Length: 183
Image 1 (cartoon, rainbow, N blue to C red):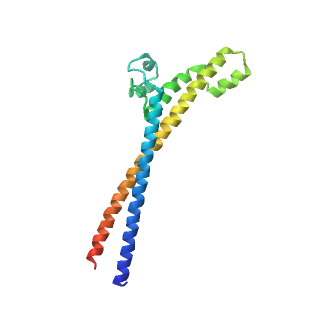
Image 2: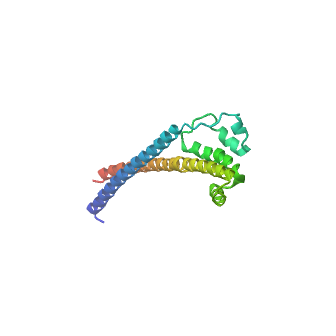
Image 3: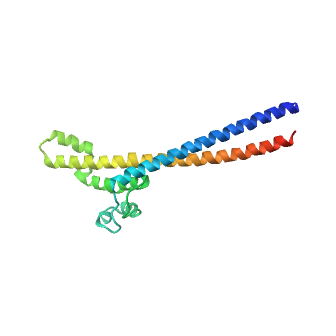
């Protein structure tokens, strides 16, 4: 291969490397923006709800099974402001209390029974409690924890993109140095 052909190939490779640096950097910026958007949205929505974990040692925590107590004590007394907390509150607090309503039946099961027995006030009350509890739990897990998790994934993808961009930039600079020495 002629020297001029090799030099042309080197220039094309350097150009492609620069394009890769730019693309990875842009992906990193978009990922970081996505992470910040998700984190800020989840935090502002949860802050607006004014949900607090019960204080450590309170009856609300000590009445829970040990595994749930351990999870709840991580955030005892704190305001619920992020997806990790939302998951704990939903699964280790609300879910435990919902399992105590109607013998552990779900809203769907109790609702079906309530429709079959429209005069049963106990079933109607259990249906209402389960609906409210399962709705809050679903919102915390879906809008809080899931959205927060997608944000964290975007953060890690952004970091990987920035790292890849930096590595490619070093390789492009090395290629430019090599090209300048091969005149």
